[in-house]
Length: 608
Ligand code: M6R
Image 1 (cartoon, rainbow, N blue to C red):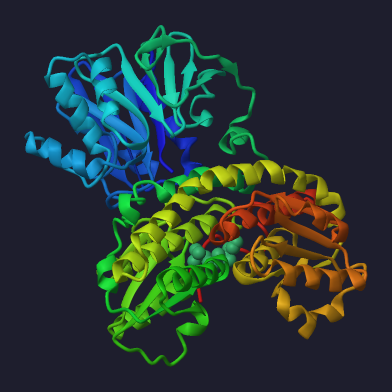
Image 2 (cartoon, rainbow, N blue to C red; image 1 turned 60 degrees about the vertical axis):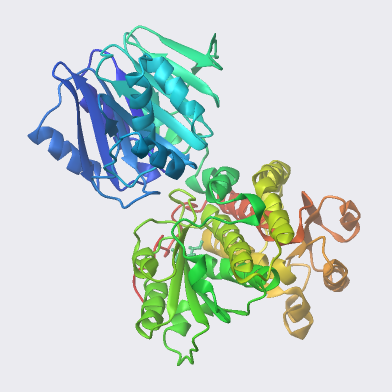
């Protein structure tokens, strides 16, 4: 996730900006840059890679000035290189931006027709050209930014400088965080608190639609063109706590970030008339497809199981799900109708990469679903089917949370896209799927709110040494994921099973010391899972049930009952994952383990 800092004051702006950006490094980035307004005009320095590369550039060619904007970029549109690094410039205007401009392609065409020359592949550059366009029409800087954002669709937090305005800069936000920090004869904006804490503790959390004009002595906030007052808050967080957004761990922050992450996954992809736009993935190349293999490891493999159900039921194409480490050593018989899609949060998992490489070398179409732009699996698939980026933003906790839910949503988009491309899904059916997805972030927020009671279960749940997680249908993969989450971070032994399998063996384990987490969906399989729970209760096994609102009566057979909003069946895996993640988190926190960096685990497994 990108980082923004804007500064106006008496200090050397490039130093302030680089120091501020350093505190945002935890968000992940692949290039960085600053634009400084000095006496000689506006100039910028940018560099691929870490901030030390930018500092080196600034050392070789310093930029003196007390007003500037800076950015760390996590690539979403265009490669992570210097050309695509922010700030982007058009004439005397420079812009930094977080978020995704959904209508950038149309705007770019329009501006190009008007003579604008683009130098990057980013969506952001359209903002610089738009502001410059309005400035050329005679509007002042503030009015030009206001007119520009009127034209933007999507999510953004921006900061804009103009060399004709050496005593102010303008910032604005819509669906992307931005704070205003009020110092003594200096003011800042930033995408997150840590970047400003060295200067002041007085901050304003800007709201969607706010535009702010920042000078050395004051900051004026406008909403819908009118001057507004926003409460000034005093922040007492330490810089480390601020990086976690006040949450105790990155994992907890990432769990609560999921509605936002899923919104980003969906942004720009839900077309009218049931169309799905997957900007880097060639749906047309799937014409004639007869079978898809989904290849992955760990949590991504669980997402693949959910994906199988989605693609088969929505697009009507048979799907196999494979562990990459097994798949790469099996002898495969491929036909012309085969395609293989790798799923990997990091895009660097050695087994997934090798499996995709092997099949690609045999002439099979390969694609990828990943969170990291230009990662190894993305590069490998780029000249074949292409890539679906999950846009979850960097995931710092080793235990995957937002990567999982955004993978499932990406697979849902893929399923609808395939269905429409092959004509196996009608426009009406596709529209209904996309409409449900549009509501998903809202249901996720409700589920997270409701599941806050999970924290109170931690003392009870931490008593046990073993767990069984049960689910059926599309909740079976969620049971597997729930068990994986618990064992990864709390070190409690847990196994996920398809509920129907219990009577074929695992039931032998059940005693009053062996609990089960049972996922009861509001679907056709509900009655069968309830029967499985009755069998557990008959053997004295404690049961924690996760069910949908309306199923309160399940309290009669539950030791603990957690309810989530009732949602369309295909969205259940995303919603039921949330209490699973919170259960694992709170148990681990209660037991005092290293939640974000559990023992023996690495975020990305780049060895075989
Ligand atoms: O980066 P990838 O998605 O390829 O990683 C695959 C697994 O290593 C990963 O999902 C792992 O299981 C996580 N620790 C799960 O929380």
